[in-house]
Length: 112
Image 1 (cartoon, rainbow, N blue to C red):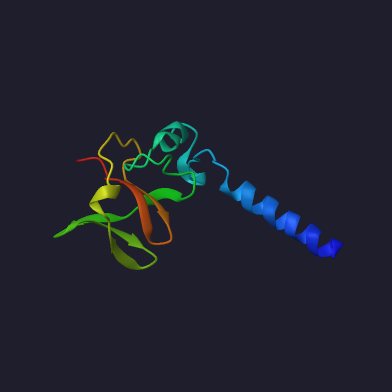
Image 2 (cartoon, one colour):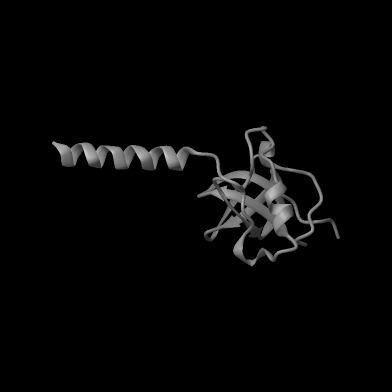
């Protein structure tokens, strides 16, 4: 019984810790100069950082007939219009913050 209670406490602690807000982080290959830019990305729906619970990275993109598309895991995936952020982009490439194929934030590549 005591062992089960200890296990339950550990699981509960893990759930609470994983639900706590986290600070957005830049991708490992972003470089120090771009880290503040990645960390400043906010979700268009106003629910917080793009990078706090997602993988933000440079991506290959294109403009399709229905809007932006990303190349993720070998597939072209449509970007929901509500996920597009029109702002400065110093990376030189499109940037997406995703959780699997769920696209939370997308910043198009700078216009040439």
